[in-house]
Image 1 (cartoon, rainbow, N blue to C red):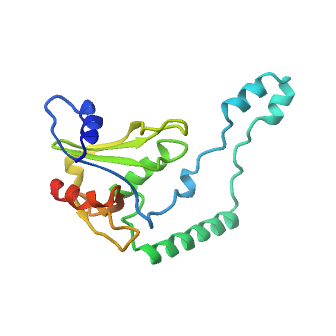
Image 2: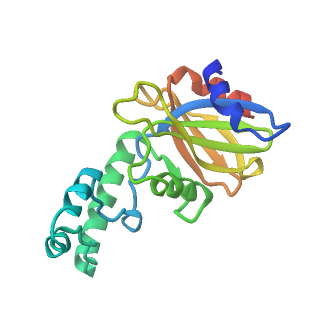
Image 3: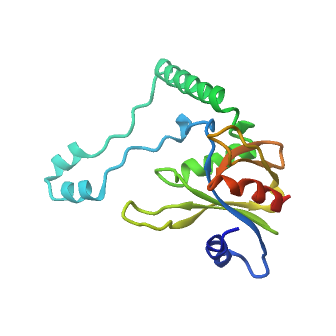
Length: 204
């Protein structure tokens, strides 16, 4: 475990809590995309908001972002089918990366990932302690050269049954699976890939 991982996680621990292992990672290829019901509403930038605030009221109303129109059954079915095909092709190429539905513990882990911020983080840090499992998300801005981690998800240690290293070819040499107590699991890829096996071994 890199010293910088420890320095990132330890200030967030409770008194007496012990850090067992931490690993930087991202979602593995084949993890389902954000479902339609988690799609965020449109938003305007700070610059757009400042410009609009200087305009007359009727013009402001005209330029205000509109809420997405509810999709009809046909449009919803078409988009759902397209997503299912895309996810199916990805699974065929890279293997299954999620076991259990959105209501399972692994699915809820993904719901938190997709809904905590408007744009889901690319890089995560997964930390396991003797009490909890924590996920920090890198929220660094484009002009920041260092990672800026913020809390994204946590659960009691008993929620996670274990971590198993499961490399899948060249693209996913660092793949490991976060296995939950209900039997569901989600695949992640360690960065660097060599960290996956030692991380899984420490958590067992």
